[in-house]
Length: 113
Length: 118
Image (cartoon, rainbow over all chains, first blue to last red; front, top):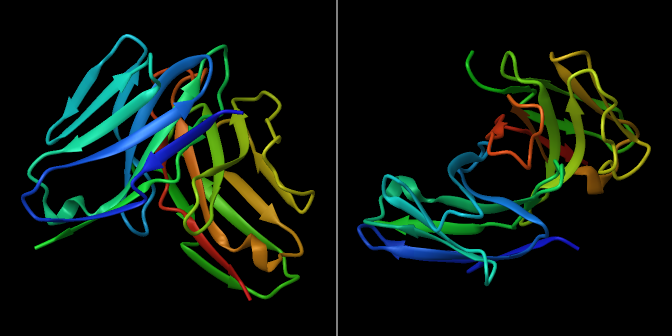
């Protein structure tokens, strides 16, 4: 069964600090991994997309890494801002023509001033 | 508008009533998904539409759930005889491409409909 596990479940940091969120998956065959940001009361918004051959992808202060051998990904947020407070969701898609992605439960990040 | 829109944004209903949720995808997007997001849970796939092909209904939790989409336009998700366990946020997403999840095309999500069944 395809699964995506995220940790930590929740995280509180001070504004300006860095943080790293983790994602482990058991999706086969692997096609791509996405990180989404979901603000409260809003739909998820894509931050990064990585395929098998990509190790790192950046989007401003967000940097995602992928280790396809260990089936792990991380999302690093640099110099956090209050607006980074949101849920961050890891989503893994399988290949072979599959079109139903597998979603993690998300990490809830709160950035305090 | 440029994004995916959903209506209503909030819906409170009594147990046993029917509800209809609406999704307007981005114009020209061929694929459309419905998901359910329960509190503290990951998004749960419900149904997938691709152009005029037969939809994939494998994620619908019971026969009380149904959805329709005409071509590449509006979709409606109907829940009959609602139960308290149906309370959740229902999200719609659309994708431009033909092969959705296994391509790098991004899913664009609507803001969701928060359904509360009393």
